[in-house]
Image 1: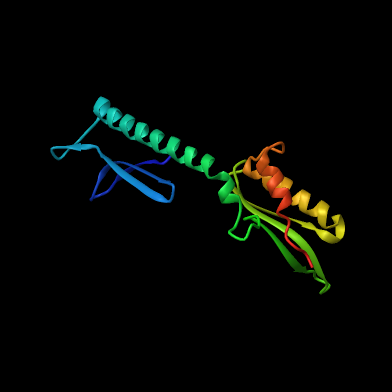
Image 2: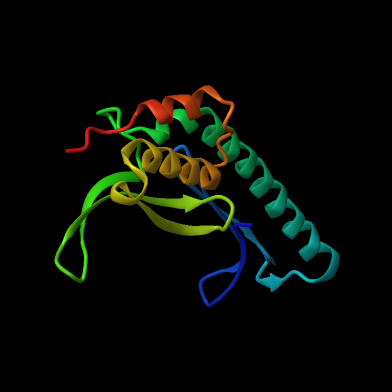
Length: 158
């Protein structure tokens, strides 16, 4: 919900704010009329208008995100945005090759970071586990074309 009640010297009312397709929409719904504060039914009506506008923007936001899901998964070089191949330095000083997954999780509403060791799993299995974790948090079905494309996007490991 991106409707917020603002009550300060400059403004009294609701603000609706959402970003859709990279464009910020910020709209204000005043709770003042002729210098007097609206109360009761009138206040509820303005709040309803603000919530309706937010619902429209939210639907546009979801539609855009669904339409661009595949494009947002890949960088321009074809690698997966959110899965990196790294050499991790262990406490012992040894370098361990890993696939690190760092994504904004749709499931947990927070950024999730996990890694899979190529030494422990082998490069193919580590990549599959990384893609599986990525897909789980990005709500990508395993039987989709996008999932298959992610599996094929394994970077060269050296």
